[in-house]
Image (cartoon, rainbow, N blue to C red; front, side, top):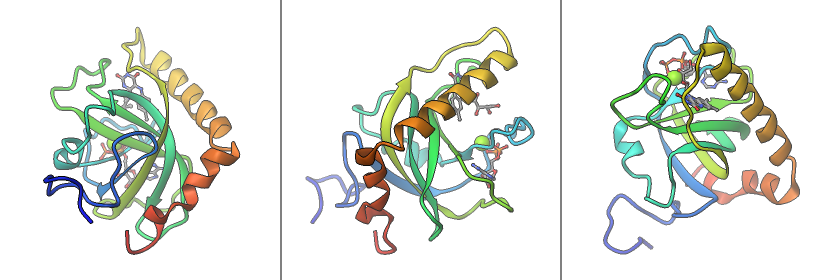
Length: 161
Ligand code: ADP
Ligand code: RBF
Ligand code: MG
């Protein structure tokens, strides 16, 4: 069953929260987010362009899965990163889990569960990092709630979706 006329959408997609989307992990901006302890798995532009208008730019929390891994908590930034004044809209997912290796080229499934805040500009990198750490704390708290935890068990995270 496919949604009306849009060939890019199928029954695994949705338009409101929770919003489910997946795609390949590509090389990002190479700004050394990893060195700051906050690596972000980037999606290609064709995935970013699939976002419906209902998913506004900003910072979200939710669930993430790399190929057939466990489903982990995540925080995601959607937009133009005002601090860096990016020219292209991006979707960057920081998974709240320690991975032993990089996973470029793998399939990343994400469920955007809740909205935290709009994208902001910052006076310093320290302010940006501290704010992201606070986002991570918020995500950890929100995703413990039973109705949010339930979303990690959605069929979307099953192998055939
Ligand atoms: P890039 O600019 O290429 O996106 P980053 O410094 O943001 O580089 O690092 C992102 C990469 O780090 C991801 O594509 C993934 O392969 C790897 N990685 C390791 N651990 C994580 C994690 N917890 N969350 C997101 N990406 C991670
Ligand atoms: N970039 C911004 O310019 N403004 C933001 O408010 C912002 N918030 C973020 C929140 C989270 C949870 C994450 C993962 C990234 C955010 N970013 C933001 C993107 C950040 O600038 C980018 O990941 C850098 O590469 C970090 O060094
Ligand atoms: Mg990145």
